[in-house]
Amino acid sequence: MDTPPVPVVIPEPTAGIADLGSPPVTPYYITPPDWNNRRLFSLIWPLVVEQMLIGAMGLVNMVMVGYVGEHAVSGVSLVETITYLFILSFTALATGGAVVASQYIGRGDRKNACLSAHQLIYIIIAVSMFFMILSLIFCRPVLKLVYGVIADDVMQSAQIYFLISAFSFPFIGLYSAAAALFRSMGNSAVTMRTALFVNVINLAGNVLFIFGLGLGTAGAALATLIGRLAAAFILVFLLVRNDSAIISLRGINRINIEPQMIKRILNVGIPSGLETSMFQFGKIIIARIFTAFGTAAIAANAVANVINSLGFMTGSAFGLGLLTVVGQCIGAGDYNGAKRYTKKIISATYIFYLVVNINIFTFRVPLTKLFSLSPEASEMAISFLMLHCISATLFWALAFSLPQALKAAGDARYVMIVAACTMWLLRVSAAYIFAFPLGLGPIGVWLAMGIDFILRSIFFTVRWLRGSWMKKRVI
Figure 1 (spheres, rainbow, N blue to C red):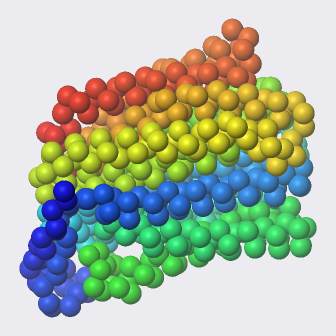
Figure 2 (figure 1 turned 45 degrees about the vertical axis):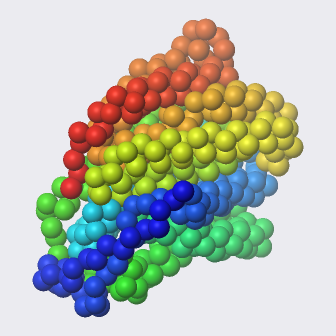
């Protein structure tokens, strides 16, 4: 039976936090990291809904772009693969901030939890602005470098979408950071409601710009830009406005750089960023393999990825929950609790992923028909979905959710090394070998992905069971 939580009294803020804009002078109470079933459910179900909404947004975008033509679907998918590389970098930095903040919350140190939040925002703004400027200047060269020779109509669609999307990078960064901070407090309902609101804006924008004004690919990009701007504004505004929250961004405009806190964030954020960036860059190289098989293969791969995102994006919600729960447990020195909650959340991930993939497998044909694909592309997409549903159901949770628990404990470097090795030594190499020398074609790429899932899950499971992560320190 779950024991009731005992409040922890946090001392009044010292001068360090007062410089950032001090909260009320009354003692502050934080529930300790006692994650009973009700608390876990209240944390994770909004994360699941939020990730489903994000996945649905990508699905709706691709469906609507499909009415412009297969070249538009291909162009947008190529850009989204590159854009996702930047998004993962922001998310990784936000993960570093979330881990640090969660551990301070678990320890009961509100002052440093707020301080870490401020430093995270400064880092995110600098990095996202840099990526935005870089993308605006080198848009076409990057597309040519990554994908080589592609059809003119696909290149035109990709370039338009890339240029407009680049302006949204600072907003993606701010949203990622703010959302991570809300989750570190255990408040995932705010990010869920924001995602729902943004979905409505994005849908309305697509209808207006694509169908109403006939802007095609540019219309899809504009709708996405406006949605990302709204999401960032809402979450940052709430963090600045609410002084009484565990974490507040009050006084963020008074820049106060704390090198030691930045170092703590980057000790987790940089390995996480390198891991996700190398992983996504490997996926970009793999996407280039599909360009060798023509527009139909590119479109089929894009559609399969969008549909599968309904599974792995919702599955990632459990990983986000692990970051918060394990982070707070480590901050409080409760390693047994970290093990217990990790086992419980990973088990729930398996059950959820099974349900999602059974539905994708069952309705794979009508789902692919939503995208107005050619018969050749549709047949390939169905094959990709069938293979992925089987491999992901068996191995995805251990390959991608369990590493979040390792990161929350400060073991991000090990996760980075394993992810980089399996991606480059196995998935990329095997994808090329299967597709060309062995003559399996595009399906060989998805087969290599399944093998990658297996090896990642083995390495991360062994690491967790051996307990090496318990020797790591973040704060």
